[in-house]
Image (cartoon, rainbow, N blue to C red; front, side, top):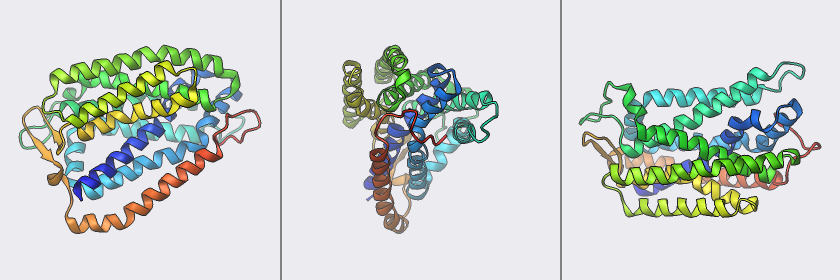
Length: 327
């Protein structure tokens, strides 16, 4: 049962990165995609119908983490509290700015546009730093307590992940816009997408080789996830002219880092360089509590998937001047 819950958590986090990644990519590139107000509104309108639904996956994942793995939640948040705070600041800024930008039709929206870009950038970098530290091992002492060294969270390997997530989310956002974005920016989207292929590939290769030499105790499942990530990247690389095919591949590519963290040392789910380890059984809640959560998790997950599918089905066509703009 504990393994099933771990799989549910991985599914939710993977779904979040696969879907919300293009939100952050579009947000980071908003000023570069269009300079006039009407164009920027149509760019945001491309992600508008999916925006809040994508964030629900993260909320559901945090709910499972708190309910099913309370001991893991405490250790992770304590060990990476600086990154968690940065992540929350980025998420709140980005989400609020997207929704507030068009509230006053005659207002100056440059400040909101800057907030969207800055919030998306902070969110992407924070996620990369966070997951990179989980792969390398959080700065915890032998007892699982956080060490008093904030700079340890900004180690070179984690910084590589932070920069890599910027490239990855930008590539994802551009391919999404190639499918659903307004026609007038199609040429710019294709050019920008080609420019982000190399940084995303460098991140994938660099993180894999560096991790192979610096991370011990990796599982065979981790190798399978890495293989899937490379396969997805090559589908994007050679299928960029077919964005309908490239979009599922880049979404899978964005989900792979979270999946890698989950299976890297399984059943160990948290480790540090000092030798501290937390297994999935040690992180889990009591069987009675897990049973109670189970009554709500299955129908909630089903509704989440159905709503996401219906949302995409209703808004699968490219946006144009006649489309309803949510933001």
